[in-house]
Image 1 (cartoon, each protein chain N blue to C red):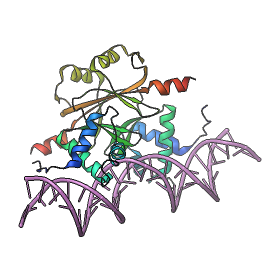
Image 2 (spheres, each protein chain N blue to C red; image 1 turned 180 degrees about the vertical axis):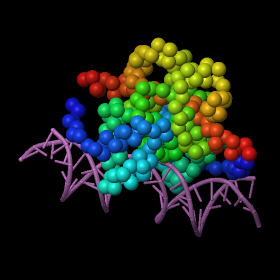
Image 3 (tube, chains in turn yellow, green, purple, orange; image 1 turned 45 degrees about the vertical axis):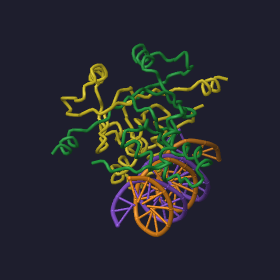
Image 4 (cartoon, rainbow over the protein chains, first blue to last red; image 1 turned 90 degrees about the vertical axis):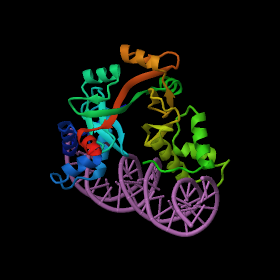
Amino acid sequence: MVRERKYSAKRDAILALLRSTKTHPGAQWLYDRLKPQIPDLSLGTVYRNLNLFREAGTACSLGTVNGEERFDGITAPHPHLVCSCCGAVLDLPPEKAEALVQNGKKILAKESFSIDFRKTVFYGLCRDCDSQSVS
Amino acid sequence: MVRERKYSAKRDAILALLRSTKTHPGAQWLYDRLKPQIPDLSLGTVYRNLNLFREAGTACSLGTVNGEERFDGITAPHPHLVCSCCGAVLDLPPEKAEALVQNGKKILAKESFSIDFRKTVFYGLCRDCDSQSVS
DNA sequence: ATTCTTGCAAAAGTTTTGCATCGCT
DNA sequence: AGCGATGCAAAACTTTTGCAAGAAT
């Protein structure tokens, strides 16, 4: 049972900004950018809407970088590069990811991104939770 | 330049517990389990030692689940299953991961774990940070 | 003696939430 | 009018840190 959503100019602005950037931002980044244009915007609203986007599948989380959750407006699953030093997040073209996985290359020439390690996580429901949700 | 480490019984206990479990615990879980046996243990010490393990490569982080960082005493890279509902983390045998990636099966029969989506993140240094660390 | 380790508590940082108000339908 | 959306501030949580005391080398 999904609740009805009403139009909200702020929600639209947050989503538009999220979709317009390749930085894979966190809540604070979005807030800082939007605040000058929307003076009566609060950080809580950014958080609330990001959670709505995630629930609705309009956006997705990439996970936490340096303690901050980062989001992607592109919901089609694709791998990412995270800089362990500065926390930058880059999209990784699927074909390059394939090559990386296959030959374990440490360097991604074009982006000049040196790979240290990879994390792969599958999300779903464990047996207990799956059976509970069905019944 | 890695600092010298002195022996610490508490550090040993934390690492032993981390290695003995398949739960991929967070700091609080380890603390709760150790506290009865080591009454003068503090949560801060668990955090400090987990960070030491990570720096030393003795343990590694799997990322954040429900806002809490989870650790693995097995440092050989391997994929994980995370239950979106209860936060349980399971190891995924590499050969099963391969099959999942190849055919995109939604169900992992043996573990009865239904897969919703996957996240793959490569960690390394971006061009800027890489050049800074070299020079 | 030196330096690492730790308990404790405060601090820091991120995210959530309660509540009154405002806006959309 | 009814209910969702929001500002604001407090609260909740996880993690880090400063400092003095204790332990290992």
